[in-house]
Image 1: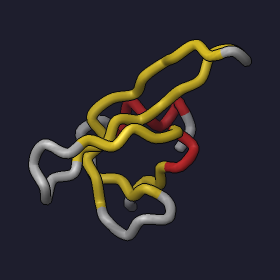
Image 2 (image 1 turned 90 degrees about the horizontal axis):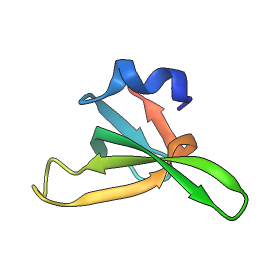
Image 3 (image 1 turned 45 degrees about the vertical axis):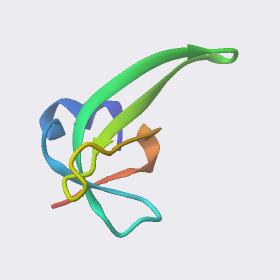
Image 4 (image 1 turned 180 degrees about the vertical axis):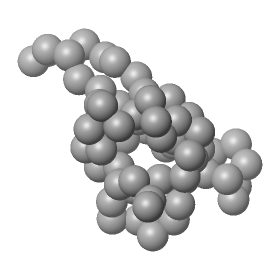
Length: 64
């Protein structure tokens, strides 16, 4: 997913690359690391209730 797609896909179901489960995109996080700024996605697992997955924004696929 690109940063331009985040706003239109917040609180929508997305797919994490490599895992067949579907997650809800609940947040986009801007962090600063040693090599500069980068984005992460916060995904909520609707099946388990309170489980949250933090991953790279590039690893998210939009469900059409």
